[in-house]
Image (cartoon, rainbow, N blue to C red; front, side):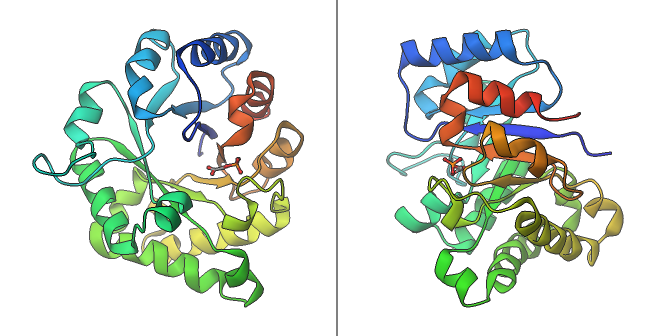
Length: 249
Ligand code: PGA
């Protein structure tokens, strides 16, 4: 059985005071019915490590580089991420792909390096509105998954968490309907089943894109939706608590 996982992607938001208020409210309100992970801006990782000590709430970075060290100005190595207590690394978010030009090949390198560091990659995939409208959603998602499969193999998907995030639903208020999301989740699961059914049965596939408290329960109730990756709503304590508490284990 796959336990529901709900992750918060804070993106480039917050400050020490607002983070503390958000974390305190979350620790008070969360009923423990799901696994949870928080992705703050990397500078705040020590603040989260301190605040979340003694809880089951995991945390991670929104991006890291695949090289071990060296002349890579502005980047973070996975050994550094690990040293500060992170368990997860978000990889290939559509904003990284679109704004910062990350390719499928770079994403695959990052997934491989994250696994090698003993951390859990949360691999984001998803189509743009133009791609959905021209009927190539499955081709796009397959290409993104295949690049990683080719690099790390199917066994790694026991560890990797996949986040399906249709780009047209991110930050737009347009959530995919539970049925629309389930259709793509089932397609992703089938891609993995074709490689190894036992592994595919264990892979957690999260939905992301304007998840709100009001939509969480119906989304999480779908057979192939194993939780959510939440952006905007994760910055509002009551909303994020309600989303996490909508999970039924
Ligand atoms: P959103 O972001 O919930 O604000 O749509 C989700 C994400 O980008 O991970």
